[in-house]
Image (cartoon, rainbow, N blue to C red; front, side):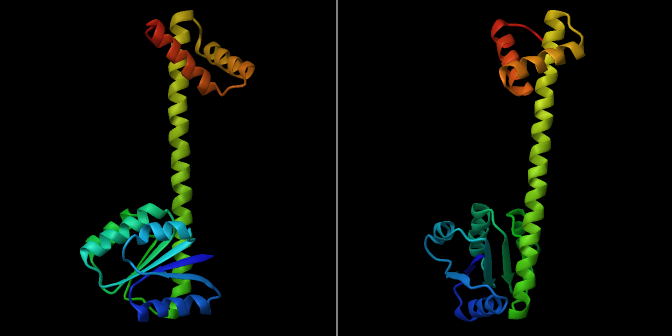
Length: 193
């Protein structure tokens, strides 16, 4: 597992690195948050990012949240003080673990595991939501195509669906693709459904 530590404090970064090495990780890279560090992290393609921010300024936190949005990887953020607005912004940006005053090497592994698990759970939910949205959109398209057939050809709903289905099978297409083609053709011909 490739792990990037974003930190410009040698002492604090060494605590994280020691904790990771004691937990058996050895592909660890330290990136100071200066210059084009977001692009540098993207090129490194890490599996996990640990951000040790200490007491970050508002500008620094905003910059770190850009990292979170750009990478789409598990991110654990360590800070020294709690701030409700910062916690909300971090969660909105996709930070998987926001740890206040918890920088100890014996806590690094459990926090890393938590960040990975939360990220994976969130990614699964996002994929399921996307599938549900796609299925709903497909269903609406098929319903609209059925309505066109029912109106223009006087078909029943089951017969309209059967025609869409058999056309899709004969042409090696998905039903929704046939429905989209029918809706487009109907629109070009000026039909109302």
